[in-house]
Length: 43
Image 1 (tube, rainbow, N blue to C red):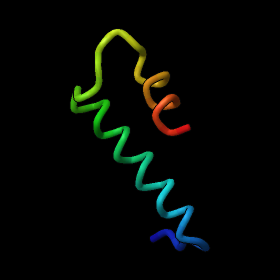
Image 2: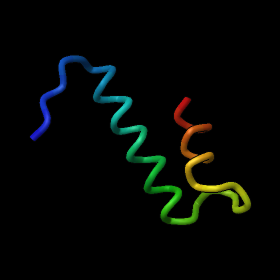
Image 3: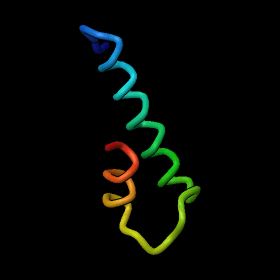
Image 4: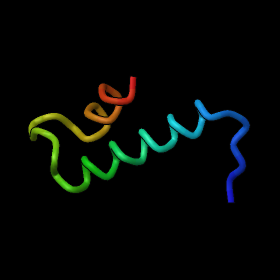
């Protein structure tokens, strides 16, 4: 189990996993590679 040292790290981790799930589920517009979609949404 991971132990986080700050709430901000927890929020960033959850946001990233949420975006990854959205990409796999096909909920984002097609035409852009999944990595680019992920990086644009996370930043």
